Amino acid sequence: MKTLHLLSILAIGALTIIGQDATAQKNTTGAFEVGTTTLNIGIGLGRNPYGGGGPGFSYGTGFGVKAAIERGMWQIGPGVLSLGLETGGSFSNANYASDKYHRNILIIAARSAYHFGWNVPKLDTYGGVSAGPGFRSEGYSGNKVHDVVFAPGIFVGASYYFSPNIGVNVEAGYDITQIQGGIIFKLN
Image 1 (cartoon, rainbow, N blue to C red):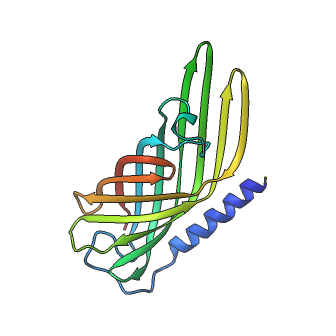
Image 2 (cartoon, rainbow, N blue to C red):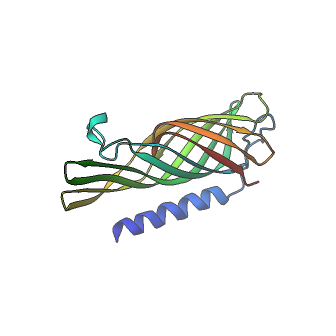
């Protein structure tokens, strides 16, 4: 119940921030400006749900999915600082002898990114951080374990818009996914 309460507070806070009108000077040279709201959806290689165990600690090669919404809030130097939310999961499975194993994590996190103000039309490059709760699950030989952990992330990314409101997006780092590709929508 405490986790649900915390998630509600995080979601309401982030939506309040995203919904506010930014009062900083508007950047008109790049693909991401103060007031821009984007939604990206991607799929790729998932993160190790249990961390600290190295690459051999997960079962098989996991995949991950992530969706993120963010809004350009403040002009800082040549770029824009954004705030938003992301959610998704990483899923890893394997079979050893007659046993089936799985390790999964679902994450709901706040995120912030600095979108560099290059003067390249249709291109947005950025780097950022995220933090939120991770809901982990592990199952093996009929046993199941579930827990909630703090799930920080760090990422870099790039979006290229082939139309005014739709483009392709890639992100890499240690976030919900390690590397992903997908589509991005400019909502305003």
